[in-house]
Length: 368
Image (cartoon, rainbow, N blue to C red; front, side):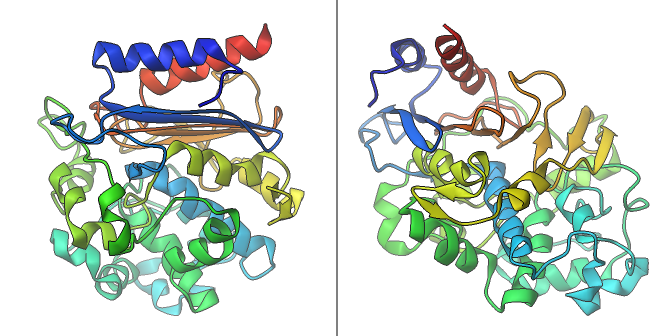
């Protein structure tokens, strides 16, 4: 653990002491250097397993930041054009009037494919060919490009299939071979059985799910319930081993922060160049702005990330979070990454005040 920012350590400890957190990790990099690296608490609900330095946990939709980075990497090599129709790489996708839908629209949740029209089961999520073929065949739920509607589960399959068509490898494989392994970063999209013992148990939030209840739109009900998932599924080998690139990632805050140092530092992390600076900056290109049809709040999306709307210390900041509270922030102006991962889940879909409180403690200490 780092002692350079003692106020951050205090907030982290208070979260554990109060029960706001059971087990968690928090990490910050600045100019590529890890300056905060905290972990503590327990890896299980019964509080019998300590949360160790190498404990990892499911981070739900914060996984999307890794999927986006993988696509940005492929694009930086000239193999993928975000402005191109998806059908250029995935011809079957042109069905259902989607011949003009672009890869950028997949990246920005504006392709009109926030869910499946056909009923699917949890086990179908482990059948890549089936779920991608269904998405390729169906019509969009709204006119692509006109609004975002959070592609909570589908985005990983959509972007992942484009990457697979281009590279011949699954998105999880490209991510592992081209990003995680070279960095020695402990984040997985498709976890090997050998690592199961290190995974913390996610503790479901109290109360109803954030979407899918009475009063929600048909689209929201579809996204929340087709298929219906219980947090307990994250404890199964089938879930952990599958590649579900929108929500299935498993890692810790250190891995998240050190991976996203690539974007925060113009393409360089741990002395190695992964991408060009221009390729990193492409993530900041605004794609769609307005009230999201699924989340029901104003969102401004770039290529794979939410963009700052005046809430962050610096304007050129990317971020996204996951169901339960995990969060990744990439401040390109300050060359800083911030990441939080935990096992006690709150009812939010995209991060909560535990992560923001830690981030604010860091920001205040940095400004002092």
